[in-house]
Length: 134
Image (cartoon, rainbow, N blue to C red):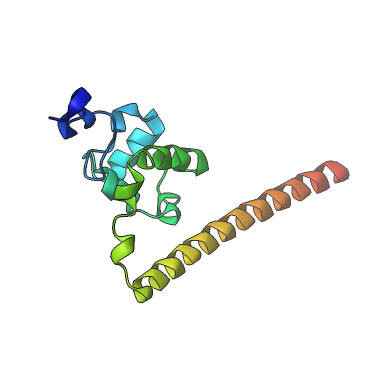
């Protein structure tokens, strides 16, 4: 045991590791339902939840930008050293591959946002045209 009760066991309750269960009990009902549905009713680990890209999460029923933000907030509570533990051992090719994957995800998200904006603009212009002709 270390001084001032800073043993690893004593510190365990204050920070989450990636292999700890995802804190589903702290989530809103919408996030809880979506996560449980995605993992067929079982509570996943933080690592499992973190391994799903934002683009994939946005295709899950009841997951939108707000609920995704809630999920990511719980993931980010895991210590940064654990979240990034694989990066120092990655070679340039792996890092480049990861960068490309993240850029593709970002482009998918940007495209989805543009499509929603475009659809909303179309709906608004249609409503405007309908009220003008009435």
